Image (cartoon, rainbow, N blue to C red):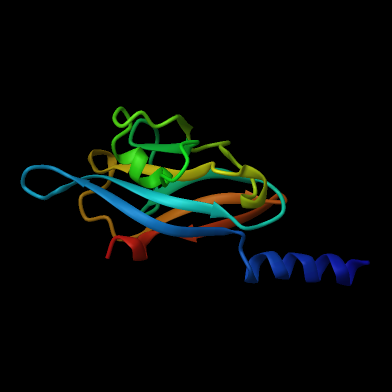
Length: 148
């Protein structure tokens, strides 16, 4: 019994259910980033609970970091999160802490994302980590490769 539990825990850490599927950037007139939208999927069987977004070890709080669900068919949440008020997207937004992401196979057309406003980020941000829980286990997902 204990071996099966240990094998399950190892499986979660070696096959994490949170996946990034893309990133969108909103820029100003000088082509400087204003916000990033990271598209996310839960490929597991149970919900994922988002805990925090940390940039270089510093937690980013709302309004600079928010979680987004998009229920508009055919649009990714990251691109919708960049222009929250436009195009009639049916978005639900909220703080990252405690946000539940349902498994992909149960959500139909729902899409999830995290939106980061660059005004809330440290000036020379190098590492963006999304902390979350799956089956109570603490996990980390590195979003940095999408920016560089």
